[in-house]
Image (cartoon, rainbow, N blue to C red; front, side):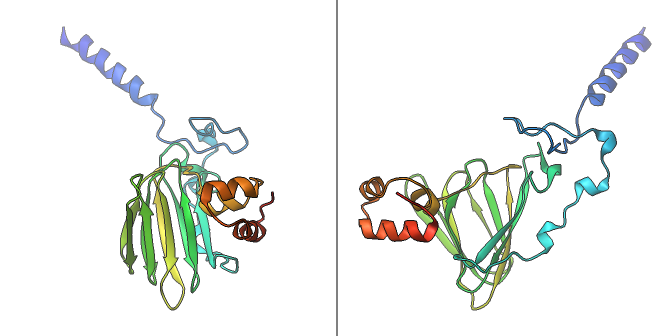
Length: 209
């Protein structure tokens, strides 16, 4: 009497577990969708698909911000597709800064590996939270909030960050205001900055108008 029932339950569970996708390595040849990239065929995967060495190389900090961000998002590391995680490496030369920016799609956790970093964020109530972080310290930046990192060490600093999304998105405040074609008159009215300052920042950041 009980044997058929147990057999039925076993078959149901076996069928359910067989249909579970353990992972979904992104097929980057296919278009992205709101739920992520389509999966590569499991039969085509090897252990190499689940490892990434890109964060082992320091980024080029010879630029206007004296800093570099090396991402391991789904575009660089397709294995994180659908897992709700990703990482990045932050290299900051002396005086380097990651300007005020936001990640619309993810919260972030930063851990300092080398040097000293002043990091902070601004809440939606315009309350500022910032702290000087040392080797081994971590700090969280809630999703969508403006935040920054500044190297406050006498030498280079290094940090790694993790995100709660395979594609956290990025908007840098300076470029949003001055790195596009938004007319100087509108920027001036909405920021209360002097037109000469706006034009100077546009010229530095590649904006026009």
